[in-house]
Length: 409
Image 1 (cartoon, rainbow, N blue to C red):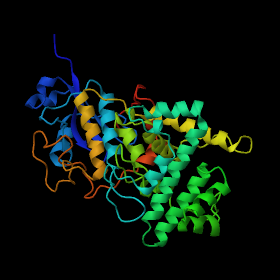
Image 2 (image 1 turned 180 degrees about the vertical axis):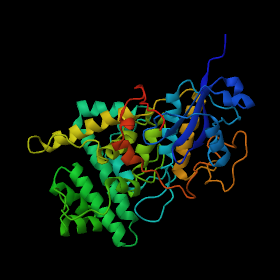
Image 3 (image 1 turned 30 degrees about the vertical axis):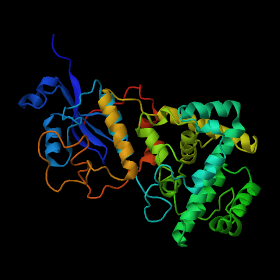
């Protein structure tokens, strides 16, 4: 009986979200017979449709140029995949992970807070939770769904408190009154108000005045940024605001720097939302509600404010559960992807440097995601992952759905 053919990554540009993959017998990998691969395809974000390639040598040439040479574990053993879908998941998750990292508050990048040192906004958020909400072993989305069904007012208050914690941390970060950073914070106030974080005008003004928030007083009082939004053109998209707004830090689980980071990590780390309780669930829930996946629900003309907000939360949870990454096979590949995503929280991992100035050497790379992640840029830009997640059909289908195909051009 012959050995079953498996899928392998031949060349991978991690930053760019593109890769060449082929199916072949394991025993010919790393030999001159590697050119006898049965099938070779090219994958690229955003849709990661497998495009047939005539020869595996196209991918091998990319590895000799500026792509990463294959995919190996820490012992130097090449990782084989049972299905092409596992490779698509791997490329997608690594690409999203490259958007993680320090920075936020629309100011020069700040170092993410150390574990055990909650920010003012984190302490404010923790103070609004019951001790049971901080149970670290509970699955976050299970806790969120249970509260939404049984105690929606309690969940609304938790989301509101976290949003207010974001504002508190951003206001505290404005040590120098710069017009650009104040404008961004003012627009975040408007986005929060439009999303229903505060039930009404009085609640928003009371929060701002009680905490003596100068930027909030300016934008909510003088400019009257209340729904409907001020008709003047906005300078920042909601997606951009999420990548600069600070994320209130609790003593656990991970210290984040930006409001977008918990959502990104939930989309590329298969274990992130396996535990952590409400303290993990609320930051992700708020980020999903803000990126626009809940547009088109009921209006407050026919429904109460609380009903509309509950609908938005339920839609956000439904969307997020469809997007959660499933573990890839084999397990070693899944663990490498999870570790790669977490390492980006403090900046680019040491085993993923910038593009090499010279072609990398042949053979397995020094690390699972080295040596040359991007074939096109010296300093890779942060992927526009949020807009792609919202707009692209591939990111909205369940992993078990068959991938679309098309013929080579």
